[in-house]
Length: 124
Image (cartoon, rainbow, N blue to C red; front, side):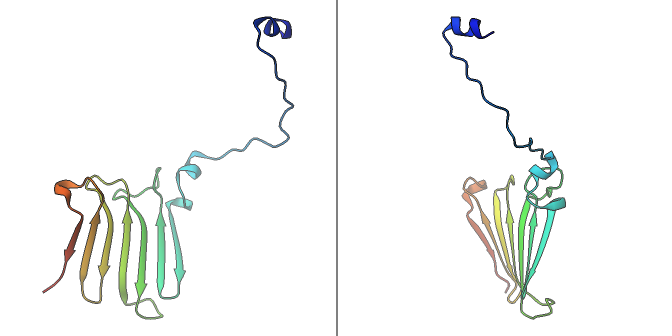
């Protein structure tokens, strides 16, 4: 075998076998950034939720991150809610809801319908 490869003009390179075992990652673990498609972390007056971007566990509405801040230590009264979206047809990328004055802000990515960048809903 070596003689035929040398005759073709291509040098043969022989490498020793790797001493590291072959890494095996399940497709589901690779697709999700968080276990079972959902990860919740609690902070002081805040709850941070992460959702899977790809795979079977991803959400149908494209929600990938949700951050809720509260005005009290018991986390009962919501102050603000921020939601981040990806891979949506309407190009919605962020929604901010301020519960203190019922203001709702929706931001869109470049290329949304009619060139909409932001929608602000302010109650009367």
